Length: 281
Ligand SMILES: Cc1ncc(C[n+]2csc(CCOP(=O)(O)OP(=O)(O)O)c2C)c(N)n1
Ligand code: SF4
Ligand SMILES: [Mg+2]
Image 1: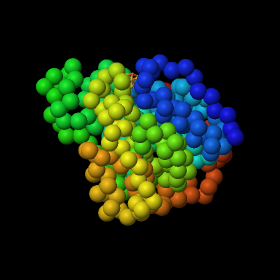
Image 2: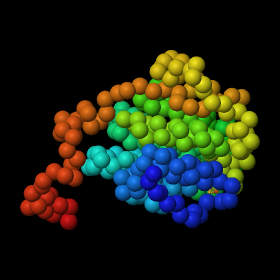
Image 3: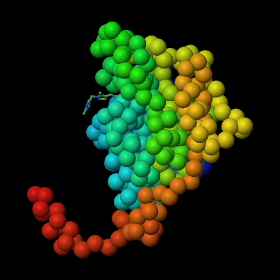
């Protein structure tokens, strides 16, 4: 089994991010991934700090820009296992356009969205998935906007692997993480995660009372059933792989990349490269 190390974090005691980090470490170890084989990417936010707390390669970019950096790395070196860890604000708000277009491209990366239904890092403003009526220091009369349903959007948009998990169900989360990482193509997992400091509505017990795991009677290849299941987010919240389909990846569709030779291994002419780079000086 490989050995992945995690480091001390700056998260609040009791934050759901701790379980997500622990589960990710276990999932990578159980998949026998060595740290050098993995690139962890984040944008900006509490969740997006995760790449700094684990001994894989890591990159933290701008707010909302985790996906483009992850996609670029995967295109440059397809041998890397590329995993994005970011919040729902970073992933669906500031980075919403990248989320939609990455679904279309189907680059082979994994996207773990730590969905605490709040902007945690900036101390508690409504995020794209905050519930209607949630009162914050900014939304003093209650959040007036309907929440985005990321799993419904992902399935409707054509994503091939769409799942929902909860940071409080660790064994289940590890299992989903492993399947998402092994999936060939863009895999998104929306992970419900309590923010104990700023979201007093969607607490650990709020989620615990509502979540249930999909069993083997559920057919995740049936798109119509998946769309209906994805809409369930009130008294009951289904956890598991909501939809799965094998689709051609970006690499398989691209005439150069499909040769299987990672771009970083291709020979290049330094003179030509210097000429191009000098144009930017
Ligand atoms: C372009 C830009 N806009 C706004 C911010 C301020 N900002 C930093 S993190 C963040 C929200 C993070 O929320 P989320 O992605 O849900 O992560 P969390 O902290 O909840 O894990 C915001 C608005 C920024 N850094 N850059
Ligand atoms: S503010 Fe919320 S999301 Fe951020 S570390 Fe604290 S509990 Fe976790
Ligand atoms: Mg958040």
